[in-house]
Length: 170
Length: 170
Image (cartoon, rainbow over all chains, first blue to last red; front, side, top):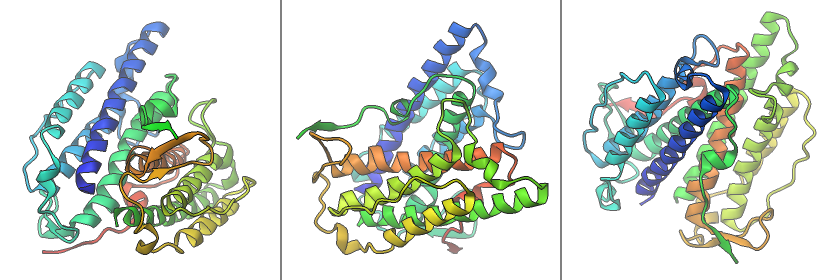
């Protein structure tokens, strides 16, 4: 069940990221610069640029769902050059994530061995894969995308990153 | 069980962050500047500085464990001004996290209502608290601390952030 809850949260976080990109577009319009200038932004010359941070966030979410459910994730080409295209990438990823239900992870136990397409000859237990690799890695790339926009002057706060939360009176 | 696994992973991630701080110290020594200059570093003037990013990461880990287990987290004063003191803050947090076992979370169900000290009059379900707020928030601050060091030229890679992973031959 926690595997499904993680995937559902990855989807929520990507929806928040999409809303953050919308704020970046409005910020660039107000300041009269091309929002796509963000695509090549890096925090240091040997770090991956913004466009790649968003792509990897999507791919990590997709791969987590697919690998834990024993499915094959759809391949999305790395050809985006605009923020609008990155939003399209997020939308494709969300459409895939939304095909999953809790039932897809019913047969995956904490110690089920996961085989990754890009790590031939190696396996990792499902819980180690999820907690030690995929969760930290997914949030790393979403946060770095957010940090790049903040560094570039877009007005964002933690509420944009977290989205609305289920607090109720009590 | 996944609540405990999350806390255990937060501890692993803070140990990785401690090792990252050690690399920052060695980098500053090699480049002959005061490593504590990082403490006030920000990615934008209205963002929180490095010292606060590390403190919040610690506090979020502590609060997650305490609130889900129905305990009260120890208060650690926000008085660090050096990287060495930040490592001390991490060590105190780790010592607290290591007091927890899976049994501490046995009575916490997905819909157990959590009351936060800083949100009077509000409650949130345990799973929503964990997945939608604490996990994204913890990794946000660890990643932003990492990003600030990378932005400042410290040579770090994803392996420093993730730490060693449990892949085996298979």
